[in-house]
Image (tube, rainbow, N blue to C red):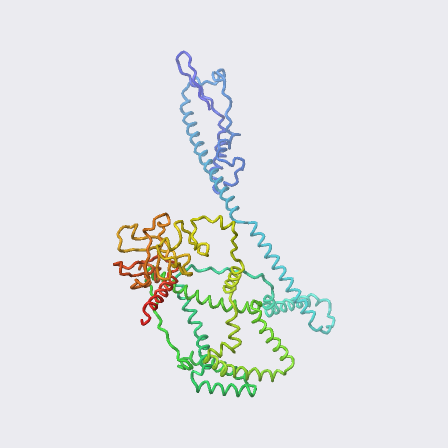
Length: 600
């Protein structure tokens, strides 16, 4: 349809170009079919996959003719001009209908496009290829199992005794005989599979699965509970060892004498092993009765029941930290003892201490030759008698007389002489330091700067630019730091008599001499020695370990020293080697006090 306006002599002339009605009706029918096709939208042609191609779907039937010329319009002009309005209304309704159909068609094409995208994504997400491969593997596995089962059945059928040949039957019964044989074979197959298939499957080799156990996070409550469980689990073993020790020490004379007589009689008659087996059966029987509710308690050493503290649920941060420290200390000591035992055994067999391993080597050779020459009955008799005498008599004498044990108890001496790995490391360091001696030539002596103190040349690494140690603290020349604190202990001096922050806390080093306690402030090394502190050991009125901050767990890292010259005690805090420093100061203080007042 085409509308043209031609202005002639001031009058508007309407030219209408109408498309043949048959073609329009065919196009509408086709669009109706497309519109009301419903779920068969996937049958559309896949040529325009994008929504932009919807405008050209029906281009074959909707091609507009080229614009007609003025002459053609004049020829087809309607002279009356009255029917143009009705035709235009019909064309408008048809065009609206076409636009509506076109919108539905675009929506259908968009839905198809989105569904194709979702299908592609689903195919990418679901690994179809891997599933197919797994299915093929399972099929091949099933075929292998069927083949193995058939082979087993064939071998069993071949191993079965041959049956006597039957009489030939008429050929009419051959079909029924084959059917019967097939049914019998199938029944036999199923019976064998039901009876022995499970056992055959058990002998199939499978790769070992490496399972990784999930580790639990660190928890103070869990750590404490594990330590208590370990203690409860080791209690029967410790009680058994304690009873054996009490039996060997003759804690109860009557019990030890009866046990000694029974054991020696059994060893004399060769009943030592049956005696131990009978004791094991007796112990299990008593445990059964105890589990059934009987109250049976027998022990050479009376058991001491430890008070069980109920676990606290609401703990403060400091209590939790202290709990973790206590448990860690116990675990550290336990692991240290176990490591010492294992390292001693390793060093015994690795000839770390040749004179000790040589004794074990000779003892093993003697035992080997004796086992080859002597009969086993005689060897058992000798070993049994020696074990009884060693356990009941020799060990009792050695434990009662320590000096005798240190001289003649060979296993005890060998075990104590075995070194651990830390001891070996210390010995190697000591030997290296002995071999390397300081050799100083004259030329090297000439290059020593004059500010280095004389004590550095003698081995003390305390470097001062002002002079020697006694010059810093204005002490006699004989006053030098003790070997324990030759390098000093790093700490901070807290003088609670002072109010200024710079004088209240000072960082520095603490030294102990024969008669003085010296504190060198870090600021004095820059040239000022007014902040150094010297205390006579004789003037000390009180010395004790001190905890600067009561909020923190533990016993603290400070030392409190009271003197008559100070109103409040001086505190040396933040000292890592607090215990060593306290023992040194206290020992030197007691030494001076006993020298000054021998009567006290």
